[in-house]
Image (tube, rainbow, N blue to C red; front, side, top):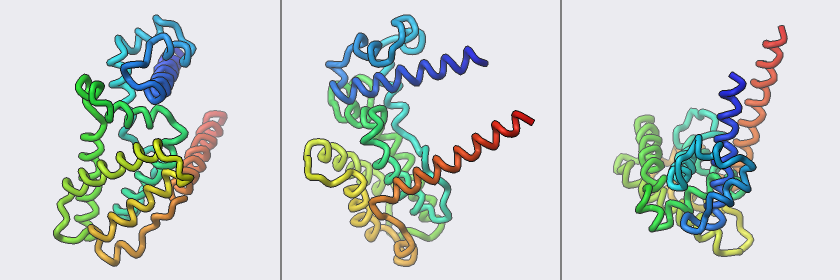
Length: 225
């Protein structure tokens, strides 16, 4: 078990280092040597987990579709809002997440191993379909088309945000996206109850972290009995 835990930890360290290097340099300019230096592992350890730079990039993209930090909500629309807002909160501080956007936007890299966008479109379409089943969406809404538009808008906002130093946080910009997007798809009753404040992601992430810290403490206490 200890060996398995170390292997999982090493793989994670390599992925995080690769994410940082891809995010900083792009796929073509990123080197295995730089990734090794950032990860602090041997070449053998890296190649045990990933056979090539392409496999590393695929591994980074595999981390893109995440709902970590989001707690279940009675409103499926609120849960969808929380997913986007928590991601906006986490992404500026987590290169492993932002690297997936840079890799997806890089045409040459995209031709090699695809993007994270299709997975996000499928996931958001399912979220919107569940919201529609609960009566939260207007009858005319095409959930897949809505998902495509939203993923394109979210991605575009993040890319533009990295280029424009206008003092506005990504969280504030994504909150604005929801405020423009939601009135076109949500029934008025559902819309009134939604929390799309710029600090929503930070608050949800903090609650999630506190809940999981409590569960970990309880587990340790149970193991000592």
